[in-house]
Length: 128
Length: 128
Image 1: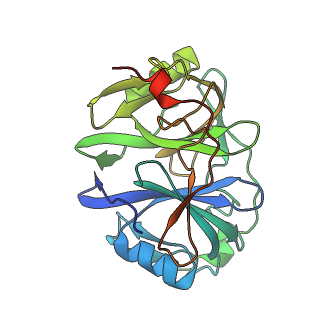
Image 2: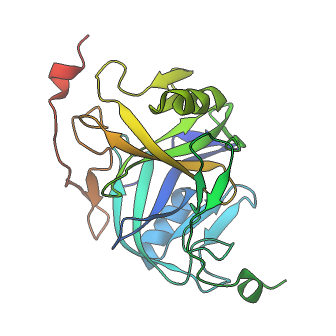
């Protein structure tokens, strides 16, 4: 059973994947997947994505060690989006936040407030 | 403050929106938004999306009455994905399920099991 890679995103047919904390249901990040990324995720039970900017498979946490251990996978009704229900090691976001969705829009829509949990110092993790 | 509509999806520059139950954190659906959909969501506090198949703004629940009342909006680190934290009236999915993500992939990846909550009969809601 495969997702339906039906959306053409930045020139490539992809599906969408949401990483969600399997214990709290917190949403940690959103990214895209191609068939290879999906297959590698299934084989290793570690989340792999497709980077449209680098045009390459992306093993999440390969550099940082902040891997995502996949506990279960949900498909949506038309199978073009999946949820990776994961255990996140470290944090999901390159900014050091636990979740990439750490900014809350103000009621009037003018400002973003940082409401996230900082779990690591990105300067110590991502070195040149 | 606007999302960054930077991904070209099915020929149009869009951002991604996840609808999440604001009380339970359950993920209900994933869709795309353009600037007009985002603006209408902000103005009305009801979720609007952009349908790439119909190439049109889509007021969720307009036909079915199953609208999504937006309680807060979160932006991710690079602002190309947002979370609409919502109160869902009825169900989010056209199949009658509360969430579109009602199918769980089996461990061996061969089957999808329906683990969702059926909250309405689509035949009674979506008439020709």
